Length: 254
Length: 77
Image (cartoon, rainbow over all chains, first blue to last red; front, side, top):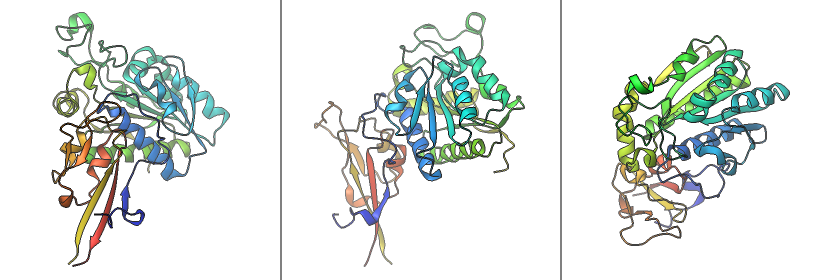
């Protein structure tokens, strides 16, 4: 056993950019996987010193504690506006936002849509878990019809609460976007695809092709009140019907 | 023909016991500890059948906290 565990045989480890700070996320949270993918992609692109993330308000508000690149913290929902400014001032930097569905699809809908429509050369990473995780599992605009949350305990009812918002489908219609995709991170195959999507989006933003939206359909074990493994199953069975995976728009030619 | 053998090293104090690696492992190598807990009070992942590990890295890739390092070696006959 000990002759296997030596540096020349190492095939996978935590990326260097993801530091040793203990992440505050619940056990099994999708955020950790996406953080890891972002760190891996930045490392592979050699942009460790030139990447600027904009962290949102929500569970991932402390993203700046975990990935060792430059970060700015935006007011709630305003990350795309802040990222637009950073990218215009520093066009050679890799600029991206990392937002949840409460931040991007609720309070920040206007900023997100307009940043995408202006064709800013930034990437918006959108973690959609259909619930407000940080504040205690309230209904989000992305909550599924019939899904129970603490503010719709009998399930989301369209007559009372309206319909789920598919932000990515809206982004497809905007001329400023070059790459809109919806991925997930529940197993190895989907994690590899999600990583490739993030890399393509980052590359497109550095080549000045326009704005990219990478939606990651994610789980919220605590908000959904399910153990992590069952949450992944619930996501596969319910979320993918409302939020089908795949590239929705790709004009990058990458 | 040489056989591929793998080994995992778990950063036990970083592990939160979410058990996503347990279901991701194709060889049922990993399980959560039955009685032991780490400094945060979580049960943590450990290789209970380490001889079956093939070093595929599935556990490391799905781990949300990046706790698992994977090693792989082609063994000579």
